[in-house]
Image 1 (cartoon, rainbow, N blue to C red):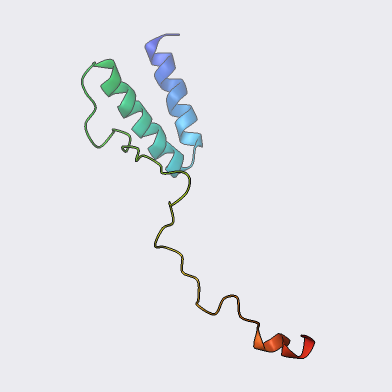
Image 2 (cartoon, rainbow, N blue to C red):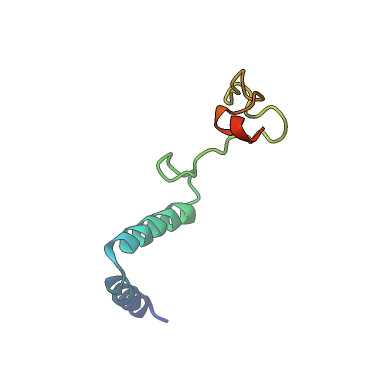
Length: 81
């Protein structure tokens, strides 16, 4: 496929997309252009740094509180006890 044909087919496909997807396609093309030059990506195009996930016991420490009277019988059920 020649370059002119490729550009024409890309343009025809892009025109059929909603505007939001056209913007995403533009960002992807910009990303590919930077990748092809073997230069480091600018911070705008770099993926966000992943934070290390904490799994297991203690991840919610200090975030959950239990009332002091949690185990006390409920007043609403006094007739049934």
